Image 1 (cartoon, rainbow, N blue to C red):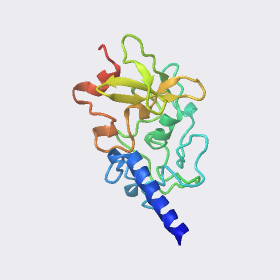
Image 2 (tube, helix red, strand yellow; image 1 turned 180 degrees about the vertical axis):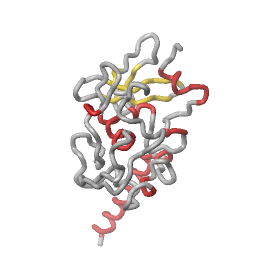
Image 3 (cartoon, one colour; image 1 turned 180 degrees about the horizontal axis):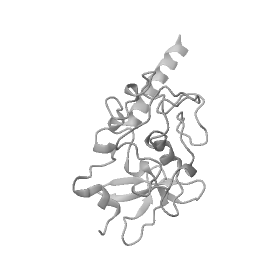
Image 4 (cartoon, rainbow, N blue to C red; image 1 turned 90 degrees about the vertical axis):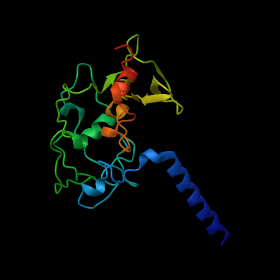
Amino acid sequence: MKTTKCLGGTILIVAFVAGAALGAESNMAGSKHDMRLTNSNRELCLPCHTPHGGDETVGYLWNHAYQPASAFTTWENATLGDESLMCMGCHDGQTVRDNYGGGKNSAGYVLVGPPAIGTDLTDDHPVGVEYQGGSRYAGKTTGEDGDPVVDIGDGKHLPLYRNATTGKDQVECATCHAVHNHTKDYLLRYENTGSALCLGCHATW
């Protein structure tokens, strides 16, 4: 009986800590990434993540198909990282959104319209590129978790992602977009009123 009570208490603690770690901005319900509305099984998390058997090569317990970097036309010297390729698993306008769980499910549909960025990324903000820093850009520093971030002022930081192939700290889709955050337009990490987010990195424009 004592063991059961301890286990129950542990589960409650873990649940509380997990909820606190995700924070209030991580509520997916009702957002454009509320996958219950866009997959045949009405699952919120499963189209992107799985508790078992995730793609170990990218982490995040990843569960959705995506194309290789070679399928995309990128800016010069860009090497797309997983944090962009995972996004393109839906936003390439080609990969079926129900293609998750390791199967070849074709029951769903592909994105169309503005959310379908396509495979030519040269008309979009560069991703998969090293963050240069320097006199025209905000400085790169280390975040609380030890990972590289861009300090854009007012206590705000944008994450950079270490590319396993290049070894460089890169700008990826997830640098500016927080996929679990529906409190900002376009799932941005911070408000961009008056181009505030853009000017956070492009500090001297």
